[in-house]
Image (cartoon, rainbow, N blue to C red; front, side):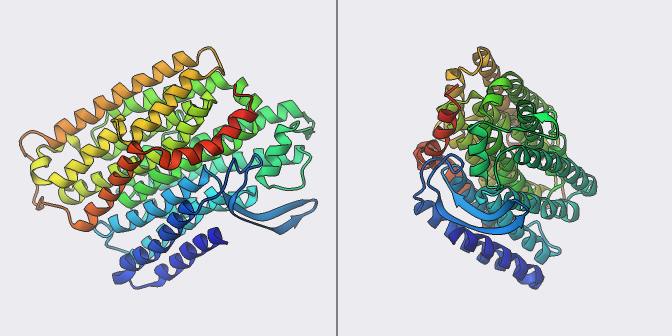
Length: 507
């Protein structure tokens, strides 16, 4: 019942913080968030699962009982962790704690509600990564949308309402498409449960018999495409990415940290669990368009970042590019490719969180994010700027940082891929994105950080307070730790992703 305890602490903590006085809400939320973080680290240390949760693996911390009976179908409370979900649960608990600390400077109104929503998001994110029944998983999935909508719409920038509505419409429509497709699939299968292992087993043992006059093969293809489209919005990949820059630019810094660090991983995690685990035949059939989407996301996202002058928008578009690498690793459908894509989910969560925190600290001091207005910040804010540069190196894939390990595994696995003859070409094109990433980050840093100081402002520019700096150093330490010793999580990940590739015939 440890996962239930993890979720319960975050939920009760959210309610307590929501009604607490504003003056103590930040410290109270931080104290409460330390409990899930400690439990998360203990779960990671005590993890004894093996294999894949959907493919006859032995789950860690498994808990299951029947919850709702819908005719012949049973909905269960079914949670557990394998090597894919455990690192993401730990990432969630750590990022929420650090996001709360990073909120102490910029958030100065309705603090109780703000911190309560952060803890509420944490509970639902843990549920998304731990749930193994579709209905339970979908409840947690939707439970993330409303608090993030409120964080953007209430505490965001001048165009916060537009950005919040756009975020909600995009992601909610995608959820409805995904929900309808999966329910139709279950109706077409010979199963009496929405438990994901049972559905996966039925899919891999013969697939759907058909539903509503649609043949089984056609239904499987329709569901695969609908699920991919629904999850692609959440990732996001081109052309479903337009909500992301607006949401990031208008969201307060802590919300951006969680949005890039964990919420985007909901989409890639779902793609891995549903599309790439349950539909190996469709993965092979749609390999070329999916690989093309991955490459376009890498290159187009990087080119858009190159054209921006707002630091936050640069980091936002770079996330589109980074998520393209995840899709490339998944569609490679090799041990290294899928393992590297999962590693990249964790690595990007840490690096993007660090970058958004660094941009937030600079904005708190300078009241601008425009690169064209900045120059010589290194002399005035050496620690914050140093962390920003280190984060940029992580994005560029500097050796001994987690980004290097993730991209190396993805490219190695993609070049090994035999899913289609064009995979080496797609991989080579995607690697060109590294050059563009280095270009726009170095260009932005050169203009904002170096040269003579010339920012005209009435605000005092100085060293950031310790509670702004400390979370960034924690993230930087984790980025370096995973870069130096990727096996800290890679062995666990590999044990869980290998059954996916093997059941797919190592295409």
